Amino acid sequence: MIKWWRRISFKLFFAIFGLLLVIMGAIFASMYRLLPDYQYRQELDRNYEILENFITGLEGLSTEDVQTELSIFYGSTNVKFIIVNEDGLLLFPFVRRNSKPDASVLNELGIGTLQARADNYTHVRMIELNGEKYSITYSIPVVAKDRIRQMLLVFLFYSFIVSSILAAVGAWILARRITGPVIEINETANKMEQLDFSASLPQQRKDELGQLSKNLNSMSKSVETNLVKLNSANEQLQVDAQILKYEEAKRSELSAVISHELKTPIAAVMGQLEAMSLNIGPYADRDKYLKESYVIMEEMQKLAEDVLEIAKVNYVDLQDNLQTLNLSELVEQIVQRQRQFFSSSIQTFLDIQKDLIIDTQQILFSKALENIISNAYQYCLENGHVTVSLKENAAGIEIMVFNTAKPISDESLERVFEAFYRVDKSRNRKSGGTGLGLYIVANNFEKLGVQFEMTNERTGIQFVIKLPPRKIKRPSSS
Image 1 (cartoon, rainbow, N blue to C red):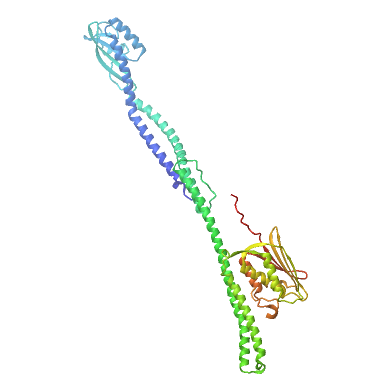
Image 2: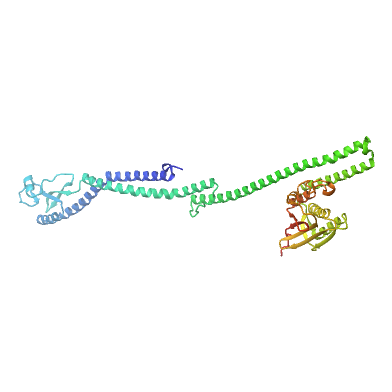
């Protein structure tokens, strides 16, 4: 949080207000210094011009007319006149012909001696009246400069207070007007720093601040979009990492289980061969135990083939190996092939919708489907039946494989897709195979993204495969 005295609005306000105070101080000081002189000179020049024009108009008049004009002018203004002839006798103010303008005479007339003071201006000039020269002295009353300065000082004092208040208000409004967008931009940038992109700056201004707001809005949207993409990519990486971790764990587990599964048959074959080579006890009957050893090796061959099938999943590129399959024909072919290997007492019922087409990876899908149908026959009860159904509905394509069989416990149903897990606790391969059939099914279908489930029904076991509707690319109309 920025302290108030460090805010840009306060700094700008202080700068503007200080500048206005300096300017007002300079203006008021200039007024105090120059205005009295200017006012004094203006008033004096104006009165001087009027008097000079008036006095010039007196020339050529008789003394009586001059006295009359001066009496009228004197009565309407505050200007004082003294006119004397060359002998020093007064013509105006009129007293008597031989009177001279001494102090007593002037005081009696209420004029007093004309002297140059701060509040008047005295001037003497010559004038000719009826061929006789006279000296005319006049005094113009003016406001003294000191008096003007005193009045002006009071006026400027109150004016400075009012102007300072107005300057402070104006400086604050101006500072807020200028710094408002900057503060808003700063607040928005702080939100962006906290990864909050909800705020948007107004773009009505046409100056540099408006352009900056526009650029920040664009940058905010771009950063938000890229951040969403980055988060999505990060989430995908985490998912991929979890998948890789899961697959690596599965491979490690599978490798350990395969090693364990291979040890027993290898040890059995080696023991039989060694006993036969030494003619120990019953192993002297080589034909019998050679045949058993051969059977064990056949089972190991099947196990190796299943392991190779599992390994194929990691090397198949689904995008480059998608194929269009006639699912109806594929199901019929697998059923016909598998029913030949099992007891003729098992009945087969087919409900196949014709010409259903899918796009998938043929090797993985066919192997998984064949294992399911093969399991259905292998674990079907004597005189039971296997039913294979293939239908298309609004949700997509559904394959159902049912066989008459004993129910499987809930615990076994959850684990039948694990490697080498057998419902038969004796783990006898003659009744349970290699234990990799359903593991291959789950592995292949997970790779292909196919939904499947295995459930107990009233009279047997049912396996359901659900495929999405096929996405057909239709040619665009020209």
